[in-house]
Amino acid sequence: MMRHPSQRLFGRMSKRALLKSGPVAVAFATVFYTADVLASVRKFNRRKVGTFIFVRYLLGTAYLPRRLAHPAYSFFKGLLPFPDLAIFIDIDPSVALRRIELRDQKREIFETQEKLSRAREVARTLVDDEWVTIDNSKDGEEPFAEARRILIEKGIL
Image (cartoon, rainbow, N blue to C red):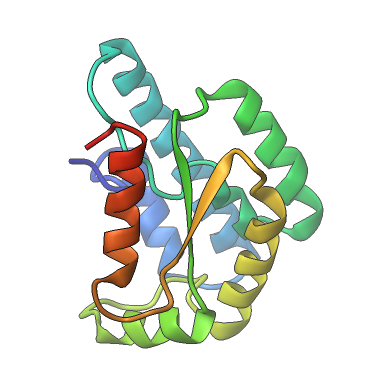
């Protein structure tokens, strides 16, 4: 399993920038995160077997300035392979923040009420009928059960 930002060079650089603040940190986090994901796509694309799950794969563009989010999404959607199943895990920003506070980690640059609300609003404009939405605002097993049902329905599980 690989997470992004990964432990590779671009992933480590992205993570460092995500723990800082300001427009330069945002720019560095974005560039290095993008390079990290593209390296993973390239690696996994060569294998052409198995199931791959990418988090914030295309919808990471929702964190960009609003005027860039749609063009960046369209660009990357044309450049990268679109998944057989695209799931948008939607969550109320206040619930997300409550869960973030439970982690034993420093908050990232985008983990504020304002930035999570804005990213959610933009992400909702990016998803279309190719995406399946799951509401992850409920605590407990219900969101996981919904994801499992969808994966079974699509023949992935």
